Length: 262
Image 1: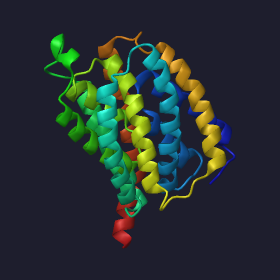
Image 2: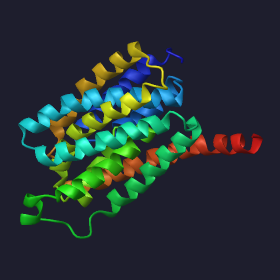
Image 3: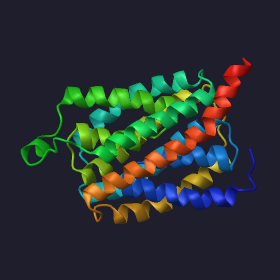
Image 4: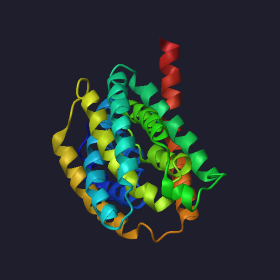
């Protein structure tokens, strides 16, 4: 791991925090590539590190959203508990899957989710449907599946949780963002527990990165709720799409060469 670019990584950590505070996600979309491509951290270690960084930052960021009434506690806890079970299983599985395959899976999930966010919800819920919220069984099922994916590729899950809560669960975007931070924190720590059996934790880098990200999350939380919902959703989708394409361009050629040589 090369620490000469650590100052650059810490500047980018502030953007990670802003993304989490504003969008309720995007933290690991940035954190994994930063740790892998800027600091040269091995992919498996970067995934485990991102779960810690995003988990702690999300937990702190959720406080600001909760004070503003943007956290749906019942839905968040149900989704988070199911997600923790899935994330722990995904973290264990991620410890035995080749690093290149993990990164490609990470990118594919990003692109698929981005498409859903940009397309939007065809049957937008409003009024009583939103107030009532999703059914518990649906929340548990969605939470486990999203948690499994989260633990596997190391994403804190915002780019999966926000669409699940908004597109499937029917929560307004601002509430989905706030609630997702609670869910992300729960799932991230469960996924991290699964990865601790196979990854090396670089705690000096982790604490520095996390501290800067938390400061950025305060700025993001202050901006949340002030951006129109459609613009926020589509902007988030385009951002995820671009990052997914970047990771694919970086990882697919090397993966193909590796398969050809084996």
